[in-house]
Length: 470
Image (tube, rainbow, N blue to C red; front, side, top):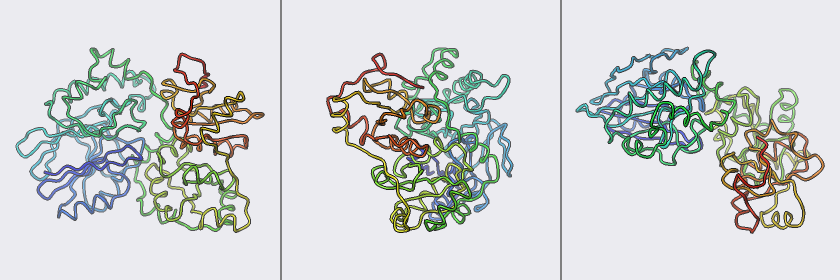
């Protein structure tokens, strides 16, 4: 029996490949099917099942295309309703995979169809669970995404989650390995570990949610401090319920080389947004006016989903040379299929065609420290609330990046806005967005809070001076 975790760091997402005696199953696959097919063909195995733990909100799954290309059966847990052929399993149902067995455990709470798959070896011994968004390492799934009018409140979902964990998962042997769908950095939980698997026994000892003494305490702790979900989440859920286009189809329509004049025409005629995926310190030196910078080398897809709420927004992209296909692939993973093309030759071609390029001023932390000591500055910290609460500059104000569109009026129109995050990635997203909104008096602090810590600027915890705007 073979178990392989296929972890995608930029999405903090874990897919799984299981194989036994020539038969394979893929759990929670990403949109690109070929890597899973290649694994099976290399081992002379046939993909029998594509197992989905739930309707994912944070990425578009490749289940439909993978099943079409391999003849595999798509499996969902009880209560799931799909617009494509799928086997809706019953609670406790057993699926044979070679000499192994996969047992279906209905574990509602994160969503009502959420399902955990228990893998039994050829002797019937529990080996591991694929827990989806029900149980993470250090956390459990957020219970607010599947709320509906009436009784299905966040608290009601948290109650279902408690029962699922205590009646279906925590009763399993302590040596069972927990393989979750996500790790640290995902918006599907709030306290996930950087570790991507663990034993169930250890999680019982260290996971705050599993240590709750009562159901009431569990509900309080799990529902406390949940940040609003990114706007693209429900759109991805809807896509995962339907017959999704394959990644190859998306690439055929998206990888279109555009001359500068063509790009400009698409912006004007189609309302396309220019998404520049180059590194922040490259972007700042010259970009197509009104571009939004979200660097491909960071948490690209989640931040696209946060800052561009509509997955149907037409996009034209600017990338480093040779990164066009990678950018389109990562956008498609989170449902952004409406890429109209990329700027051929990049910003150099834009300038050569006689078009004006915009810039953003970025200064090192040392220079910022000198300016801050000499004068009172308008400083905006765009990190997450938890980062702000842990430590921040005494003179800073707080507008987390994910809330920035709701707080544009808070930025000064008369004075320079100095923007920083933890390391410089998010602050350039913020600065580019403000520039696109016509606010040109912005300065990025390169290296962010990490670089500031190396200066002697005074910092505070959440009890000390500093204004929070969200």
